Length: 138
Image: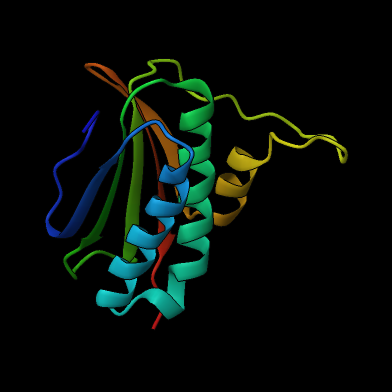
């Protein structure tokens, strides 16, 4: 995995090939893990949507494996959150842009920025990671 941070808590990681069916596979993996962690009802739809957008971006611009990592930190933080990371071998950070109403793309990072508690990017030794946090409720 590219640019992963060490964290305590439950963690799930996957690596997907740079192929179109990887978006669907990533959605299913995320949904299944959130269900197993009992979080599907609180953040499931948003997490799956954002992972889908970020994996699609990776497929569009990078040619190599795509890593997805989810961390549910141990209790004790001020706001319980779910951390999600999507990594690819392209070192260039993604560019947020304003999509026009008729544009077919360009809304992925806007969705992340509007939906996540926090988000960002970081470079790794061989690529970059786009990460986001979702507040856990209940």
